[in-house]
Length: 404
Image 1 (spheres, rainbow, N blue to C red):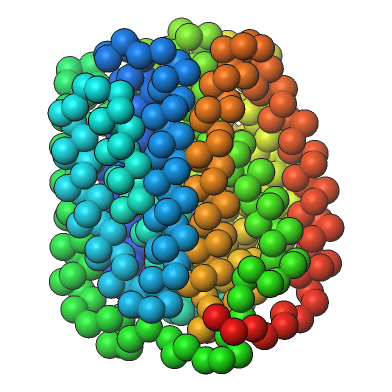
Image 2 (tube, rainbow, N blue to C red):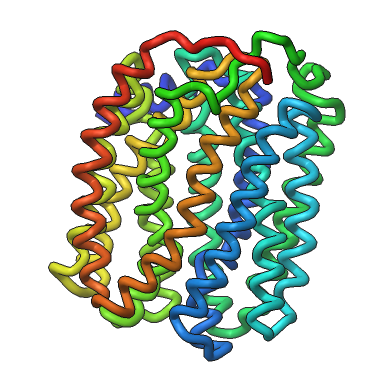
């Protein structure tokens, strides 16, 4: 049985191009130090004395910056090239994260969060564009799973280390986060000295390039992606608050629960996506939405670290089924000359959810009660799943060409 398992892992990871592995390594380095975002609400409320609503406003400033970064990161990837945008994103965000360690004014923190988000979130559409350029449509879900494998392997380190650092010095979180971003930038500068893995520049702009803004089925799909991201935005806002205030877990235990999510993704996501190859990605995501929202909806029905780990396992399965398949659906809808713009609009849905989600979630949390947040998430899961199943049929229709 062990031999069979090893063979399955080998098959799942075989045939992946070297450029994809180098990009994944850079993502791992960056995410291994990612800890500020996970603990920002606790930092603002527990250490600086701001209210839950004020912490939600700062997180929404991050979301607003993400809107700018993801949209222009996608557009610039079609103009400057995906690798150039990744380098600029990592250097700028690394410097801003270090600076963020020092202000105490809510306005200054919010402003720096907005700028740091604009810089850091430009990385995602650029990285997704690079993956779409490296992989053919039939294996793109595996390409995105490799990136998520690297990201979550890094995140299995960052939040746990951050949880312990937070007990000693929150300032150290900002420094580690910033320095690892700069290290990831140095890696990409070293490996990809030219524009891309083969020295190619950005794709040629042609008059018949597709426009995501005139692609109605894709816009409907993006609306559903927004709802998925709205649910997931609670992971960075109300989720750690709920674990701390209702479950009674300290920061280090919260970090350990977050690590349950990342370690499960590292262990099984590539195997699951490999086993589901050939299945319509939008339909796989429809099933995943039920698990994602259902796992969060289970939270009010128990207490303690072990029960919390169970709920994390359920919604992590949903994340495994939704995240890479949604990315693959977006990439498969674009052509070569519009890949960055499609990825930018796709990422924009996540950024918009990060803008709305923390404020909405913390408002419901404070006004209606913590449990109401998770009941609402459960209801949203039914809506999202039905919507993805329906939009799957629409995405089969051809895309009309349009001027960029």
